[in-house]
Image (cartoon, rainbow, N blue to C red; front, top):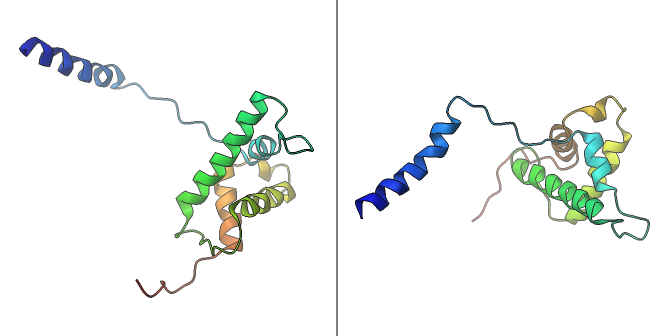
Length: 129
């Protein structure tokens, strides 16, 4: 019984001991250019060309959702009057209008700026409950 607990404790500690002092690589981030490419990999009929393209398209949609969710209620406020897919299309359209150099920047920062410009939060907090 004591040996089992010792083994469990050892297993739990090993990843921490191995990782101490070692830096993990940062999570992958997208430039605005990459986001636009990944988002627009569907063919003219709306279907993804191949499984890799489908993966990139879903990744881009998930990335947009994550960025939007992270800033929702603080940096921008969804009014509930426009569908999410329409908001995403509007963001992508605005990213396409940026100069090439600007599109090399962090997509998350640019997406939040676009959302904040189109969907600002009101100055006063909502009333009611």
